[in-house]
Length: 284
Image (cartoon, rainbow, N blue to C red; front, side):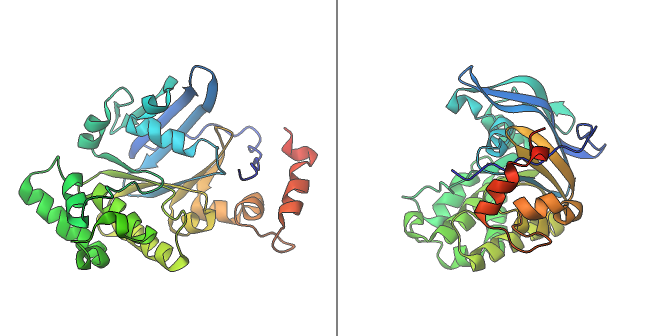
């Protein structure tokens, strides 16, 4: 498991407050698994409409838990929201079933892609558009093919025989078939080659700029995420420890050192990071 490097919370820093135009808000959320394990503690996050918000943090920081809470699937892992709320377009939605959340416009692409391996690309997309009329589904499919020409070229191919990058494209395309208002992507770059990651991230930017879609991007690859995000939050051990515009976070020395891998003295080794972690200022 990757080493968890805590980022110090700025002194007297208030919890982030939602902007008036926020599409999605997590308000003081606390999530507990199996009545014993606290995964997220008092987290408040605002996702403005039409922007890309990045959730950054090491493995186990609570990023995926927030997405599961948002998507209504915590129950599959014995997780519950013990306090706080999730609001979408000003309404509490944390009590809604997953299918109702999809109909409201909240759609998640989970980590690991999870396509229907025995179905073709075309059939996977049809499954994604089951809540739409036939005409609307065809229109959405054409938009997906325009975003991912490779899927169009191989639309009759069995999904299980596709490369990891192609499966990630298909997973995103299948989510887009629902015509989401908010698209949540959980580790979209995980395990992919750099050229494929470039393509995936180009599409994410197009979703914001051309389709005016709101994107919540969960990543461990902080550099990639901050390159395209408008705003970002850094989570450690279930808490927000730092937030700001993507430019502000990218310029922060601690973020550069522990998430971007560089500092004023150059790139740091894992040994340096572990030594730095033990310094007194990280113990607060």
